[in-house]
Length: 113
Length: 450
Image (cartoon, rainbow over the protein chains, first blue to last red):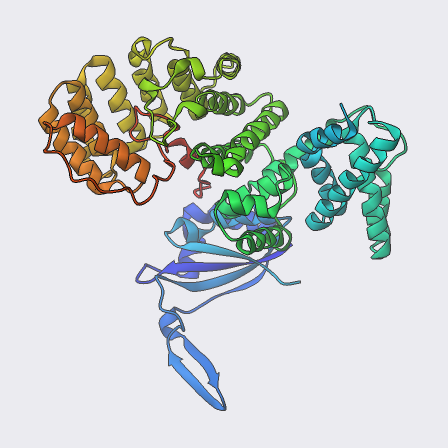
């Protein structure tokens, strides 16, 4: 099954750059496993929520908001599209994700197929 | 046994198994339930006519599978699925049920998957494993039927859409997931255990279901001493169920319960199972709690209770469940074993830490220990504090009685009629009073740290 991992980071938390993550010894085994098993089918690292623009439409008017639509304790810092056997495997992966180990959280969402 | 009795017995014993196998065969929870229901309806007819089959469970499973085949054919599903279903409906009865038993274990683990909300786990377990109807489950949990129906639909949807696997978890997940299953059954039992009046028969039925499911689990997981420990714990609590409130609905403490009215057979069975479990040499929270319950239920009188043993067991339990509630229970036992002052010291420690501030059993425990050592003035103050915090009528009434005992006689009160009868107590009035302590249920929380 395909899942999207929504990588959530605490607001005001420290965000590691992709390069820093790649060099952090804590994440080596995870990154190696994901690569060697070809689990990740796509994804993106996102700029922080402060760079977001939210678009809504009311009638024929386009309304823009500077920032995310919902103020929350965490914001989405990235997404990974993964393909694994079942939810247990997706949870196991999410629980070892650098973001989850770094104080954030990972929301696991099945892809509508 | 009449055919009607045979069907009723088969329903209690085999429902979960029939549904479990049908889910594996069809991959469709709703279809599985529908076909199981249909098979039981047919059984009533056929068994009246042809007699009860030698193995009712196998008859029901085969009948339900045939029905599933018909439905799948009508819906023109893929040939592979049909072949799978057909393969399982070989003529004659298989002599080996082991695969079928595995189905039931699969179903237990899937219903209790930690990715489902705890309320959904409980509801699914009752619906698919115990065969309770949606209205029955709704009544048991005091929610509208539509809410419960919605909850069940949502849970089944999530299992399907989120890809929750229908299987017994692999070895590396098994210990933590087993703990989760035990937690669901314990919760189920406690829901029923807090029901006390006749009107709550539906809820009391939950105790019987929890025990039935715990039996199934203990049989399916013979290498898991905690499964035996849970079954022992439930039996030892259930044995005392009818003595916990008096005819007027007032709480009766463990000390004052009529021991001759306890169910001896249940106590003996529970104690025997516990011994078997403990011989494995792998203790756990359910075995330890069962051992504590056994200390209480096997003492001929309240005065014979081995409090030193109980205090030591709570110390053991703390290694597995380091919660302040367990420490409070230990304080009671220490107070009973070594004198009130030793217990009061531990209570004071908990008060200083403040984790239980707002929990009425903390001052109630202090009050009880003070009362036992004859310091009634201080005890009265602590009872007053507990009364400020208590939320449940039966417990309030219990604490008020104690407070009256500790106070010098007040002037005669003006008579005011009671407006409402007290509602049944959902929890023990204080840790010595009774019942499962609200501690190990929390061990069911899934660990999220990999």
